[in-house]
Length: 124
Image 1 (tube, rainbow, N blue to C red):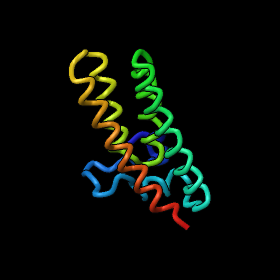
Image 2: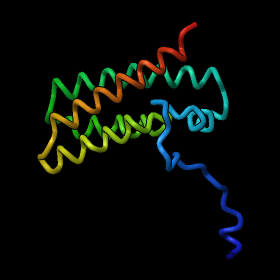
Image 3: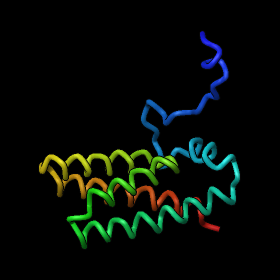
Image 4: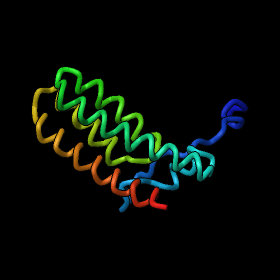
């Protein structure tokens, strides 16, 4: 092994196997350095942003690809990998022109599940 590779820090990746929850809380914890207050703040921001982005996609289909891309990145950051995958599927459907309405419906469902999980976490 070269010296450069020996000094590289290891960065955890998303899980290869599916998880049962709409949120990978271990991933979220790593991304927030286990700061519970930050986790709660990020989750609340994501839930609000996801709702806004879905509404914007419905209102302006011409911008849906860029908005789905933005949602995909946000979702990956907090560990909402089902939302990220659904957003990626919508991006692909828009590019190919096939299955756009089905992909958008799947994204709305994934966001709904993630938002419900977030609501349960944020309950006082």
